[in-house]
Image (cartoon, rainbow, N blue to C red):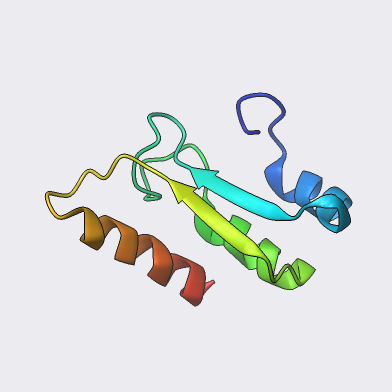
Length: 82
């Protein structure tokens, strides 16, 4: 969506009633959702919580850390801290 449209948070707010599943991926490269991504996921996850979304969030990524579960855990913590 970032690549095709941008304006992620506003688009979520306008269309949340039509969304059944959210899918994350780092831009560029589909890597970890960290400070090196074009998208600022902490702000996006805060907005998702503010909107009241309670559905599933799938995560697609190519982990950068040697232990892929560490990368996944970091992303989960980001969602919980939002």
